[in-house]
Amino acid sequence: MTKPVIRGVIFDCDGVLVDTETLACRVLTEQLCEYGCDMDMTKTHDLFIGGTLAMVPPKMKELFDITLPEDWLAECYERTFVAFRNDLEPFTDLGPILDLLDHHGIPMAVGSNGPHNKMDVSLGKVGIKDRFGDRICSAHDVKNAKPHPDVYLLAAERMGLPITDCVVVDDSQNGVRAGVASGATTVGLVDITPAEYLRDAGAHFIANDHKDLHSLFESWITAA
Image (cartoon, rainbow, N blue to C red; front, side):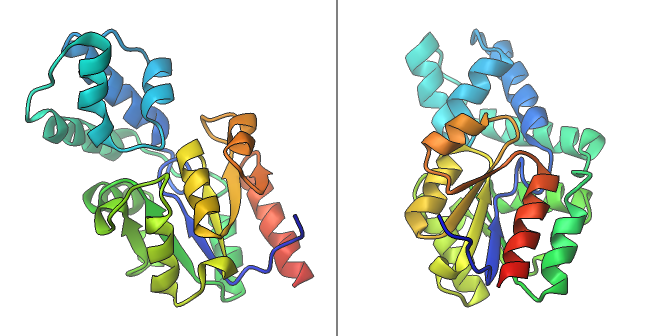
């Protein structure tokens, strides 16, 4: 694929802007084990990373014939928010990426499967929430979550740009599928999900870490 012209960038949240994936996976795994589900971190990642928590109860019923209580989701969010407030750390090399885009006047948005209250906590904790203004979009704002493209289309709309002029950055297979389906140039950022899985999901480019992503953006902006 030829080098894209970057007119806007839409970031996934968890695993891209904030280093939440391992924390959230740990909390969910511990909670499900307490309810009698035979889970570990690997199973939780493989089943649910890049999806929504609405997927969890039917999967636990299918796999273990265990019905989660009605308040399990509220409990999960409460535990997750505590973990974020106590343990969440920013990605060391994210700041220069946001500064680069700001310097060149390239608008940025967020498109996540997570709810707004979760992003308020995580983005606020690492001090970058205000950089996105009203361009923080959740799957709860649209009809369909990723792998459908709805949340990325909404984010492009909030920036006032055609989605084909945007670059999407996501670290999950479902997120990459959503980016590709939207029509955006899609970068798979390697975090927990291996690069080959992101390629198989259709990623147009792979960034092995945030430094690699910065180099990609810098080369595309320079070439424009």
